[in-house]
Length: 370
Image (cartoon, rainbow, N blue to C red; front, side, top):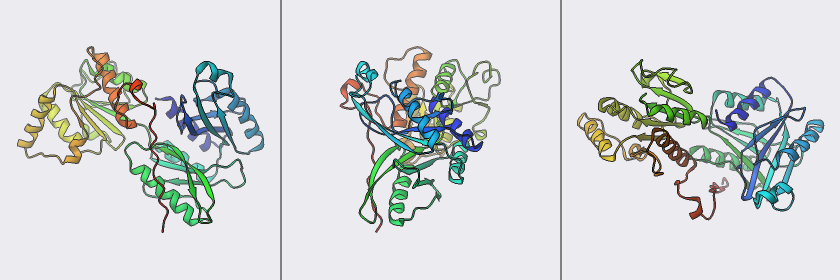
């Protein structure tokens, strides 16, 4: 399980148990920074913390500020100029500006509902008006189906909900702060904290080269499933890091946060898996082996009357993996997971030295209701 998911799970547990603590969230970054918007850190009453919001240069100061928040119940927004304010930043040379929202962990009905979404792994956008104030806290929870919470300015709320829903429709939505104008003409900054649930990897095939892929997937925080009908291969001893071992795809829940890799090394099983995967809700379908072999699989399925739409074929990646010169099974597993992470984040997987910026900004345009 990835560190971010561990923090989210802990936050859900604290809310459910009505336990106190402080939540620190990165809400804005300008320039370079180690972590991105949406990164979280939970600070306990005694000063211990879980999660990271920087490479280590902010945690101590944020923990000290959390003591004030914990004691007073007030919300803080702290701004750090990393190239000026902190001695660690000078040695790290990260010339960026970071804003951190530091707030008490709430156990109200709205936060309880948020804890449910986290616990059930359901997609939600948490919309917060950013203010150094605890008396007028404005929070909305927006899902694909519903909106929870209510603001007095309906025009403002409709604008915020519209942005949140458009984020949920995107393949790779990002958490970010957006300045929005209210009906009265006042500008408010709203932080859109996107939670899509845990990413899942389904590996079709329990051969030797699947073992390092499953291990790398689990280390990276993916909920990992291995599907193979052969009981001698698909065992817990071979795949100790997998969350689920299954003999058939029908036993596995495939959704839009699922990534599929087909590596049965068996034509019939690969064809069956490919037909299932491309017609499923999976975001990505990778097939191990040369491109010509995948074309043969598609041709075989076409002869069987199984055809795919252009949209379904868009998620097909064959040959699977980034071009890193992978040779061993371990390197191939790394190549595949690198491509999946690049795809999930909306990047191409090119050399960073050829890019003007490391991270992409993907701000959803503001469209006010009529």
